[in-house]
Amino acid sequence: MGSLSLSMPLAKSTIRDYVPSTQLLGGSSEEDMILGQQISARLAKRVGWPIFVSCSFNGWGDDSGSGEAFCLGLDVSPQLAAAVAEKEVARILIREKERMAESVG
Image 1 (cartoon, rainbow, N blue to C red):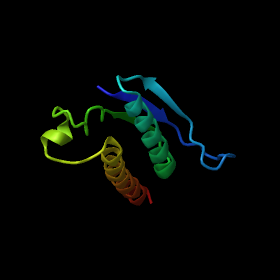
Image 2: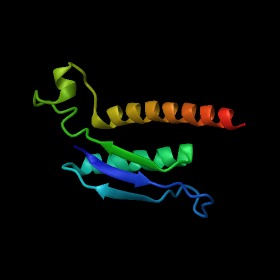
Image 3: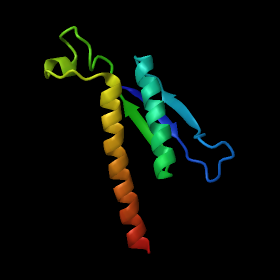
Image 4: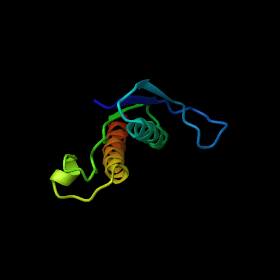
C-alpha cells in the first residue's frame, strides 16, 4: 500500500499557488510520498475540492525484471506513470464537477 496524502483548496489564497497539504500515512518509498502529495495539491487546486491521494509507484519502472512496467515490456518511469494517472483523474473529476453544476443549475 502506498502513502496517503490530503490537500485542501483555500477559498481565497493570499499566496498564489499555495494549497495546504499533509501526509496522513507514510509509505515504504519517499518518492511515492512526494508524488502523492504533489498530485493531491495540483488536483485540489484545479478542481477546488479536498483531495485524498494514495499511490504506489515503487518498483514500477525498475530494470531488475520484477517491476510491473518491465514485466509488461514498457519503458515507463514512475514520474510518467504518475503524470498519466493524474491527468486521467483530473479529467474524471472535472467532468463530474461539471455534471454536478448542471444538475444544480
